[in-house]
Length: 197
Ligand SMILES: Cc1cc2nc3c(=O)[nH]c(=O)nc-3n(C[C@H](O)[C@H](O)[C@H](O)COP(=O)(O)O)c2cc1C
Image (cartoon, rainbow, N blue to C red):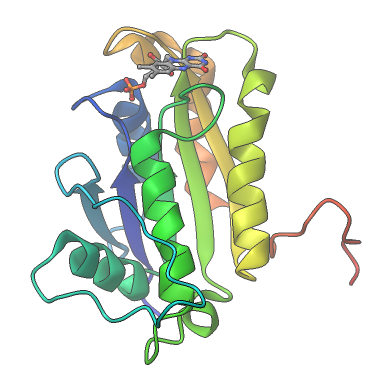
């Protein structure tokens, strides 16, 4: 099956470190892998409303940003959350997109959970802090979301930087970017699950 990568840019500024690092990693993808890049800042989603128990979630109106992101998500074999580290987790733009997954899980006719199962979630993140373990909450958010969805999880490519372009000075991150997407990621597991289950 042709791989189709969807890169979701979650920074609130353009041309930031996260996008630079994600583009370095994407350069290594084989030519027959499709790439689609969408900025969540350029396609803003309205506040998410939890409609569980009140009414069904409906398919979003054609032409809306919600429909665009839903269709792009359903079409992707690989979803790359390219979010800067904001307050030790994903950015607000990214979190809002993930909140929509809850609605899509309850939208009739799209079989969101079945469709996403077996596909791969990846993360790319830039952070100002030198010690990368401060990004563990973000890593856990993405791992656990993938586990809940029965998706594979490719881990998070981390790079250091504060001002735009700083990440290009992070030689370790650029080296990791060269092979990041070459892995065969395992199915994601919650920490309490045994790898042999
Ligand atoms: C709202 C906000 C929150 C941030 N929170 C953190 C943080 O918790 N830890 C950290 O190391 N850097 C933090 N930073 C710094 C960014 O992660 C860093 O500047 C990164 O390079 C931004 O990525 P970008 O260039 O892709 O936007 C924060 C920046 C902003 C604007």
